[in-house]
Image (tube, rainbow, N blue to C red; front, side, top):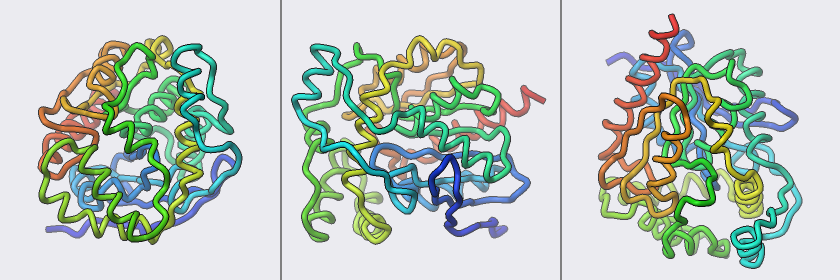
Length: 306
């Protein structure tokens, strides 16, 4: 088996911030950006998941969003309160935020520019899907294809998270390393919404890597504010030109499956893949189906454009 090219994590200045990124795959392969979700470092795109995508003929670039991991940490805003959420839901009073998803989309464009990449495939998970959607809306000429995974349009009519998933999202930060490790396992148990022994066996090592790269609870709070302050993309998504694939789990406890369906309905020509038994995670047993779908969609978009 051929050893795939790999560039270890590096930091580059883009859109006024420092962004930590890592590249898997040959320099001449089709570029594919992986954008992670709320509070999740780039390593939540599992190393082996990235290698398997690279083996399909992609130059895979994963990166830490602003306010997470090794990328720039910003400042401002207090922890989100229940009162603010109630005002948003019932009175439509916007949540205050130091930045929005559009700013995070410009981070992605800045990284593309800094790396000399004109039109990559974009694959975003959860908040990362929202960011990828923003890029496709605002910078249509920069997107070769779009894959939105376990994400949504921001449409307020979509059902909300389960009580358990909401508790995970709004829980106060752990106070110690030991508490963090316990919380990590508990959180992913809820988000996977089922038993996945392979992933559960890896959780302690994943928790260790995440902890050692550095936690930023205040940054996660700012990212959450960015999502809530950005409103709905539903109408603007009708203008997306990029070939689009939507992947969603049938038992997602955090972003309701209707969020994926709404995304697919809102983007002209979008394809929808609902994965039976998948929650709000990318569990190892479901990688083949997810990677196959991304591979077929992205290479198909390139072939159609040629």
